[in-house]
Image (cartoon, rainbow, N blue to C red; front, side):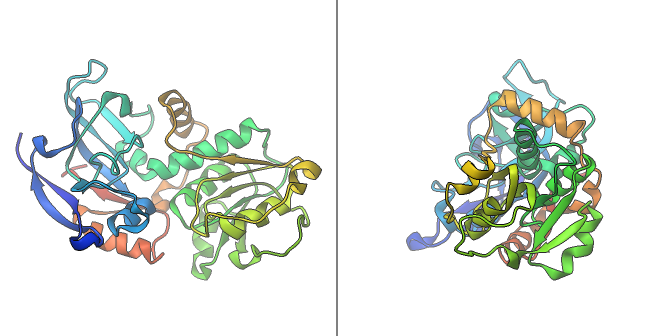
Length: 332
């Protein structure tokens, strides 16, 4: 096959942060795998932006192509489950961290990592959703499994302009939940309401109070912030309320007590997006059907591959919102 473009991270000098640059590669330069995918779209996630700057030591082995999710078309396959021309989505399983990811025009992966494109979703739809959309849907899946239903009270979504949160707002509102979007960005209120939020809550409310339990307000919460915000959420859940936690933008530690659990029966569910494939099929099928967001066009910003370094810098400075998707293939 011909050579192709990739954005590759190289180890920094003297243990410094990695250096990223656009390079020309061949198939043999990629991580091993039995399925070669011609990448159509890949998204830019906060984890990708941190990894490119060497923050939190997300990537340990260099050189490495980042990008923790991708959609595309099978170009070659030694795995009998996939044929040339199949449309697929890949995320997790170390993609873009322990093995080369989506920031290249081709990716080589193991067949066990590959999910056929869910019926009813396009390659672009699945890229806009990506890891973030899957995490949002997985959160709602487990919340509903734990008894959450529309009409039981408002659902709080924190870090509301982020990728996971924006998709969660869209899905929840489409399911007739009353959604409250929490953000510290005063210029984002119209955007959040356009996704279906009925209320926008100032992130400054989520502060440590010193009280083990507070006035109950939320039937559920989708939390990407962690830290003091998660502690506050647990103190303010309604009886039998349920919260999911999958991020630590506000810190990895939170203060709390057992009182919300034993007096109100609240539930806290940890969300790990690196799920087994059987669960992925269930959740992606929901994303293609009852969980399908209605405003992906408002959430998505589709840009050229060449803009990747600029997008990651803006993301690290918290100047982005929704989902940024890179168009990797001509005509995609």
